[in-house]
Image 1: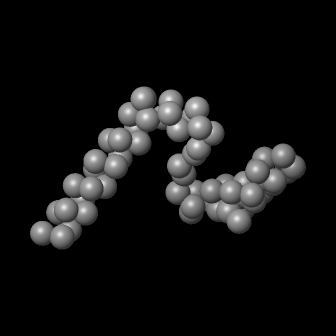
Image 2: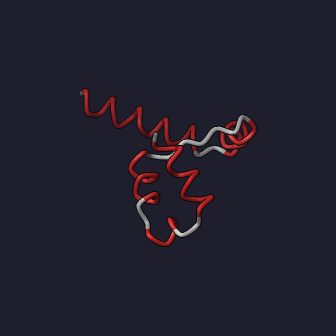
Image 3: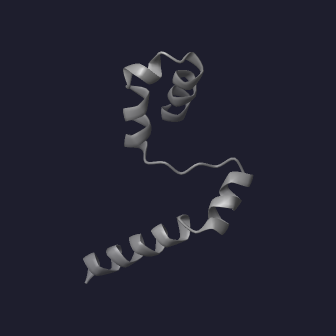
Amino acid sequence: EEVCATSTSNMQLHQLLSSPAMQEKLYGEETCIVPFKSVRYLAEDPDLQKSESISKDLKKMIQ
């Protein structure tokens, strides 16, 4: 029963965050929701590390 509730909660959260209205609101508040692992993976990418500004921004996000 707990697994089902978690699955339902995750699905509802996904629907909420993927809605255009919510994305627009988050964008307007300069808020970004990205999994930490994704940001860390990007920060470790050698091609992205070549860009000083991108690398700097990614490092800020994981601190």
